[in-house]
Length: 257
Image (cartoon, rainbow, N blue to C red; front, side, top):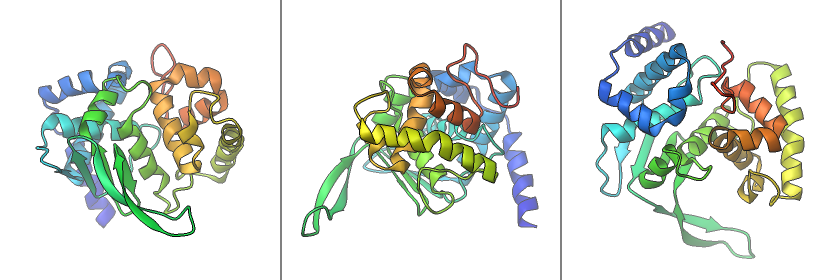
């Protein structure tokens, strides 16, 4: 019964008129949107409506939320759902947005003693259902000025990765064969990167652990798609199947085309 009412509510949200001002935000802050086929653009707009209605957005550190912030973030989150039936990040409840770099307390257990210190961050994703973003960095990377980095895509990739509760670099897939294909493609690439983290377009941070490998690969897939396709074709092909997009193509190809 709950699923029926949830589907009905979401269908009504997806059918709502999409404000003209929001279309301008998509055009300026989500460059890939302009290259999507019309039917996929329509789906993304509907998914944005659902995410805005279902997720709690909160400005922190004095930031006053506006439509540009909310729509930009929701649209990037929606991009990552185009490869499958929309799931709307079931574990995610809140998106906290700071004006700029924010500071958190961290424990360091690398030495003989556990110490605490402050760490400056641009984004963070919690398995408990929270994404935290620094808006200035998020906007800069959203507009294609992040030199291959996109903090919104990065943190929402972590949310995808943790939907099964593990956060191990493998998002939820629909079949055993898909898990096997994912492992064949991504596992060796990760090990090669660990051996030579300076070699390639992914960078050293992607070699931190499998979760960061997936999140960084997602950023690069969307932001430096041609470079990833040439340097790491196996990663590119697997992410293309998963996200249902081929951003390195002259016009974006989706699974449904």
